[in-house]
Length: 51
Image (cartoon, rainbow, N blue to C red):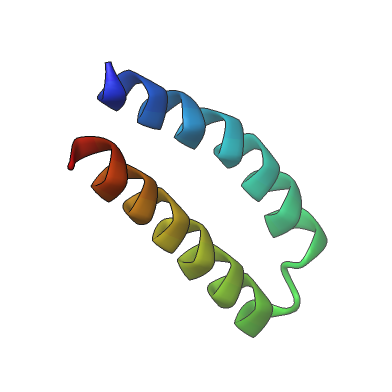
């Protein structure tokens, strides 16, 4: 159940991230920060949900 919600979260965010990639593709540092920020949010959600 939790894995499904995480996968749905990823799918919804991947669409947004692709738009961000296209828009910010010349700002690589900003993209890296955004990407790792998203990963941190996903990891924290997973950690709290599975605790």
